[in-house]
Image (cartoon, rainbow, N blue to C red; front, top):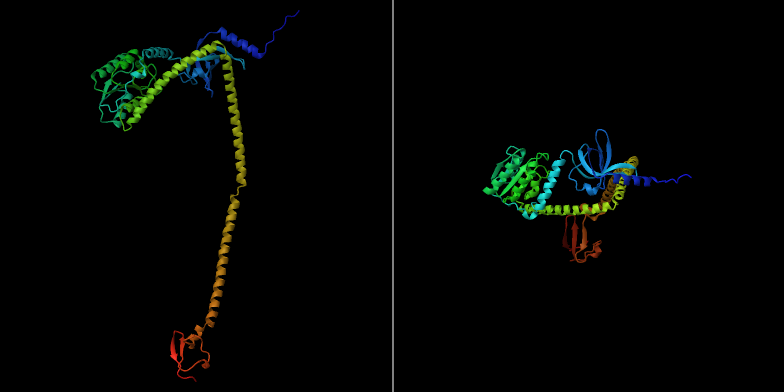
Length: 445
């Protein structure tokens, strides 16, 4: 009798393989170079990790990537810690990354994080120990290299913003052998002499090795013990050192540190900025504690095995999101082409030419109307002149101009047409062309 066959679906097969991979490989460290890097809209990271002979697909999900300080990019050589997994919808083996660091600075970075946790536990980063900067310092001290770009930038800013305030420079080495001892001695000397109201601890940017003097514990302890307010302006904006966390204020650059210690008319703005930075530090600590709590909860959830399913769904969601974006882009391109076609058709049927013809016809009609009006006015003027001439010919005034006169009864103003209407002694009024006169009838013929 033939043994009964066990038939699996593809999904069941991939699920079994995924469990075998997860159980068969513990958390691993892998080193390689990033290629084909993609940051999805969901915040998940996808890329290939390769060396000279092979490559493996990698995924780092948002709940891990959000705490990463490293900025991944193609060509960067990194070390990653994670687990082997399987993306079941495609049956592809991949590496699920939990932590990432630069391969060149991994050891120093771990040393940095260990010292940071140690000093934070001791309270060296606590906000209640931060001293406010003086609003109007009488003297500003600068602890840095006397030949670097940082001192030139600081002096230029201070000369521009507050040239009346003296600046005292404490020259030190900012990297290499003996630099940490010189930095500590300069801090203690400046604090002991009390000649400066505020100190700037600064140097220009560089690699983590170049900035390591400011990550030494003795430098952090000296900064913490200093009674004079200290502002740290080490490196560029993306560079963080232990001294930054211990100092009373951290500036992103040496020039920014000089801006913060130099007074200007916006004193209230400086005060608000200091409060904002203190609030930001407190919130970062709270976020860090909340993140650690979230990671603990995530680990508990992962032990119950829904993590892989969620990661599979998240990766599938990213694929669908990319396909949707591509489809939207194609649709937008088609609609743009259709819009251009409609625009071209509209241009061929544009009413502009017809409007221009109508405007020209309107102008001609206006000219004809004006001509007709002028002609009608000339005809009316001619008729008026002719009628005025006729009226003038019939006017009694014209008769008077020829030497005739008009006689009226002075009492009744009636015309005297016959001698029969006259009587002796009667007063009559005679009108001439240029006036009138009265007379008395003395004889009637």
